[in-house]
Image 1 (tube, helix red, strand yellow):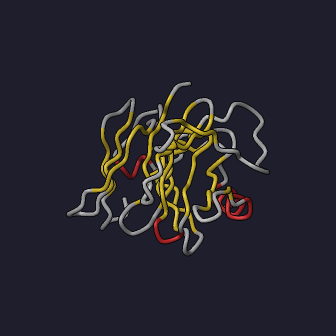
Image 2 (cartoon, rainbow, N blue to C red):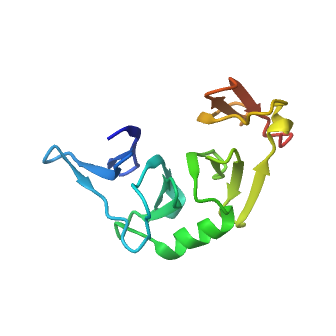
Length: 174
């Protein structure tokens, strides 16, 4: 498997997302266990590209190519089909890529179609960030490879595979 992401949540559980799906590392037995996607319909190989945690909601978000962003309930240890469908309806994309959660609780998502989204789960709104507003004027849309937040300014740093680094100014909203 091609490992795309490794993430350790606030409970100390280590998650591995790969071209073969989602695994959880069992520290006591030193083995990995595959995580079932339950009732969520998956047409092809489950390629996991990103994993993040919503601390205040007790949820793990899993970005699964061709399916969307899945919502895993950390208490029940199952995927929440209702929450997954609500999020899918909200973002209108089955091809999410990298995910990032900023200090304000906003979920940032890059989709394989070139869309860059700022998602407010509380208000259930999505802002489609226009690359032109970030200073990009080319014809080939940037492919996001990494995101981070500047702790002093709150600006979002957006690293790309093909066009360098962009900065989303949190004060200006662009």
